[in-house]
Image 1 (cartoon, rainbow, N blue to C red):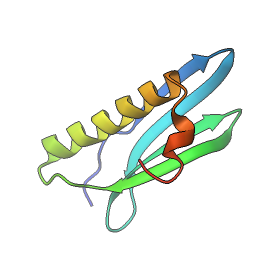
Image 2 (image 1 turned 120 degrees about the vertical axis):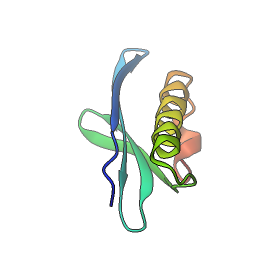
Image 3 (image 1 turned 90 degrees about the vertical axis):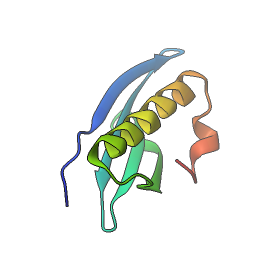
Length: 84
């Protein structure tokens, strides 16, 4: 499997610090995003890769990560428990 970059951000919302991590893993490969608070996973979601070229896959990973960062900032993480 080709190696792809992972993305990590720390976000503070109303005094709570969250770490958001997105990476590609598994077989078949999936994009996995997890939100941590105090080292514990608060919510996790994954989606299959929908793109085929390395450039498109990297773009898909980045879009998913940035979408989750915005969802955390806007208190929408509870809506993501079963979807990415």
